[in-house]
Length: 346
Image (cartoon, rainbow, N blue to C red; front, side, top):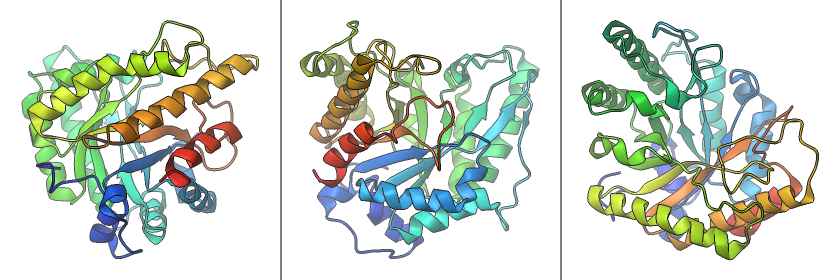
């Protein structure tokens, strides 16, 4: 996204430029903002090809959502190899092609944020993925480059694309040449705006922000040690994170986008926003209220800092009925918060 004033993450306006005039562009004050939702899956993404996915886009549009994100997977092996479904850029699978069509038809911009599936590997989350052995590390980057470029080619109509997500131990200065090559090859494959989705505690160490269009952050910042903080305490908790983010924005000239922002229904959600506590937990009115309060404050922060913090992709929403899911945005209370901020308040 280059220099400020000429390069914006621009919801419907970007979609019109890349995918055709689906609707009249929004006023600049709205078009520059990302009001996004991650539409997730409980399989491996086949839901994105379903009629239910299209119906969910209609519901999200009514809540004021102007961007949606999907996250295609590759699977990680112990020795650095990746495996993924064969992808033909000339005939992309429907689970990649249909989201482009359905989003374009509604004037919604699509963000493609590929994820590595680490389940069954030695790693507990993506931030632990590491290959100290030089051969395994080289093998990883060789496979990763082929996969990420294939996904970019298959989704070349997307408005934005992430070249990586939460790979904290593989996005170091020593790995910088790999990433700059990957970024260059992805740019050849798509006209999408490019970012990298860095974890909340690692984004300052990413050495290649200058090669991207925006700073992407998985925004699970701890906000309070209290089990039941009020709105004033949560706003105070945001202050140091926002100051550091704005400082990086000033140094790089890049806008910031929260590639994920969400909270589970848990009394630990302010202290450890990344942690899932929902599964098997009894209903707790205090936890429900805290989840609503956290999202309310987060969306308020986005609007207040919108000159440099362009918006967020909320985590997460499912096509159809979710099974044993955490971080749900598709509840009456959370729908009300989102609609108040993005539809009725815009």
